[in-house]
Length: 114
Image 1: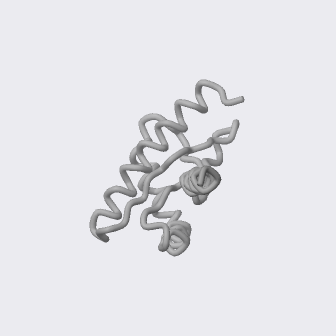
Image 2: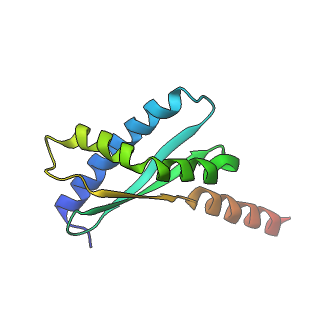
């Protein structure tokens, strides 16, 4: 179960990461990276960020690029949250495929009705 402090820090990190990715992808055009969830470990040392990437065809390539640039993203995040957090957690990025999963269920249900 997530405590109040963990939930507050998760929301803060999600908001700031969303802003960082919005700025970085604005120049690229036709690419959208949204942070769907952030889970912070109880000791606040690791933050797992789940990303939704559009277009889905390029999602693995973009996720690999984000993982390579994770130190830069962590630095930008640390600058944004330095007034709230003493130490910025290590970032781990994962692809959030929940929308694809929901799409698949809808498609299966629609085919079952026919």
